[in-house]
Length: 428
Ligand code: GDP
Ligand code: IMO
Ligand code: MG
Image (cartoon, rainbow, N blue to C red; front, side, top):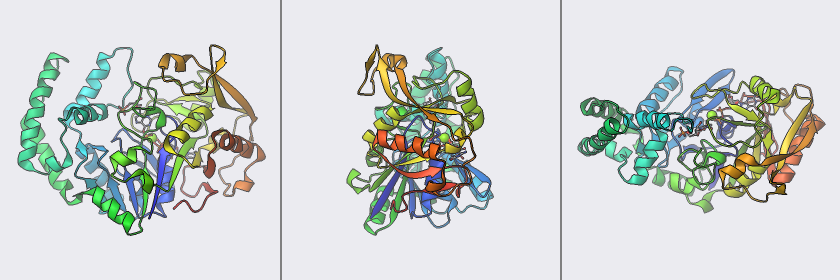
């Protein structure tokens, strides 16, 4: 039995896709447990770039199971498009398994995601408009449609009718939008159902059987700790649980089955969308980070907000998810900096805080306490051994590890699969 988790420690886009792809070499099965097509995970292999939204990043290897778990909200159209695009590039998708309990994203979810953002005026969350929030809302409201319902023609027809009748009232009265057509939606979704049917199964049984048979399972978090609906900067969050605890409810694998939790940490910070970001640099440092790191969203193309590494956030993520190894990514983006800063404390009204503030007002006003590090000013992308990294880079990483109490497991120095320095070989 062996289960390893890879999850985001900051605000997303840490490079989870790259780390999952790297570790998937050793895994039998890769599992998504939350989120939906709001994720954008980039994997680069031999100079070829793949952008994954719903499919687990293990898809690039032949012969592995790639599970979309019950905690994921699935837009079947996006999933099929992604599968088709993979097949066109010669990738085998026969290992995909879709949970019969996953909730289905319908066209009114995406539409209402956009419309409700409009209604918020200047106080937008800045969602990806993929219908993620509205689909999770329906799940919690107990009106959602699950994959098992989609697979049953009569059941789906009935549930869609019930839902659409209500959604159309909402669309017209609240948003002044024309109603959506039932017959078109029914026809489209029954078509998707036919194509997805061969991949649908009870993934809870599948995963627990695999664990019992000694298989290696890799869990792929989407989004990240600071946009977790409970632990993040609520309400500027996504609607799911990216923390490792999300696996218990999103994949049906119990917490005591997890062996190692790898927190992916970008060597600086970025955030897409609204909400507080204590170490944000609205100055030339932020510009330089954005330019050096090409920090524009994978899903939406929006410029990402940028800032220094916040070790207080990483320590908080470690605590919440039981992170025992860090995978630090994009260290090479800091190659050109004379000086690098890391936040190791928050000061609020002159006092040092011990906890992550729950109040957004407080978080928006905290003053980060920085430690300053000398830059290494040389390219590190070609380095493959930890000891060969410049001493300044090691000092930066070791301070992060010491401050957070989390061991360094992997250091990534480039987007490609081989641009990876491994300190801990045996995560499984
Ligand atoms: P994810 O959502 O956490 O999977 O991250 P994204 O894919 O949205 O963003 C991370 C970006 O960084 C992608 O373009 C990756 O190919 C790239 N990347 C990952 N690790 C490294 C690294 O160590 N160095 C560089 N330069 N790029 C990296
Ligand atoms: P990956 O998996 C970064 C952000 C959105 C918005 C908020 C809510 O690639 O790291 P949603 O559409 O989920 O309701 O939007 O969450 N967000 C992400 N930011 N990376 C992501 O995914 C994100 N997924 C959602 O920008 O602020
Ligand atoms: Mg991303």
